[in-house]
Length: 421
Ligand code: EPZ
Image (cartoon, rainbow, N blue to C red):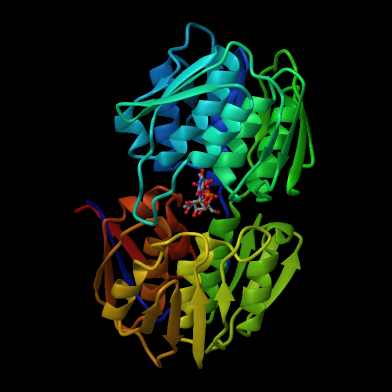
């Protein structure tokens, strides 16, 4: 298993390009199932999770290709032959977002057999709301041997009020409703930019969705959709992570393609820490003070502060000037970076879903272990600041959601490299 070795103390300078958004690419690739023919997706990040989603589609009988060379950001998904509407356990267990094929399969092929994703490091992450929505549209759902089986001759429009705001739950039901007969109203929807991006793609394919990005969506079902050619929006969480990299090293970095309208809560929070953040033509420039102020944060659904940025902000707060209170309200177990940050000298006390972070003068490099995607990013960020050498092990977690992060940071002046273990 590869490791990342980083030696801290180098303020990052220069400019860095944000890749396409993982959490938009995954539902959008699944949406290819909704139309016959070949869909072309551009600015698709080269991530382990994208590879897994392409594998899931291939297993079903889709033709998939990632182009190479100058076009290596382009993926193609073709529905040209018979499709076996099944997603096997061995793939779904490696990436729970595979469950996003459920809605398209039952809408398009009348049946689906998808492995239950099971829990993951950060929480139980049930899919009850996904199933509630599909049932409301008329799907018959059975759970057998760890698989969800969904059947429906023809889905019918309905009103679905989500009991919990769920990003992929909203996306799954959207992708089912676009081919249902009649009108569907989704209430208490997720409002993330990636949900809006999925709606943009589905509407380009011929769907009739209104209200994406708000908590109520109206979907007029259509008989069929056509394939699409679409460029994926930039990854706001990678952008936020790179902004924190500038902040934690006292640097000055232009994060190219970062979209301020998708990062408002992160921008405001980093400004509270004393960073100067300005929108330039090509992206967001972050100028950091030598020592940042401590700030409090509570993660909430979009447009609140994203849970996917909690670990990264905590990394920054470990070297801030005061005490910061960080509350994680979305997932029940998303503080696994804390014991690893302790190994680097951080002063953090966990009280239930809240972490109290007392800023320390310095962190010391140490061997640490990644436990989940955003925790691993937090450890790399702490290593950029720590005195001495930090070795981050199990960085396959990092590769799920960041495209060659160490190369991007090295280009900004970090002393960081990947070691093949
Ligand atoms: C999406 O996960 C993202 N993944 C996650 O990003 C992100 O952390 C999360 O949304 C929250 O923003 C993708 O988009 C592929 P949820 P998702 O359903 O959809 C509960 C990353 O780091 N819930 O919005 O699985 C659930 O337990 C990843 O890039 C139910 O109770 O998250 C959680 O507490 C991690 N029943 C809360 O809702 C359901 O049916 C939010 O989960 C569904 C969810």
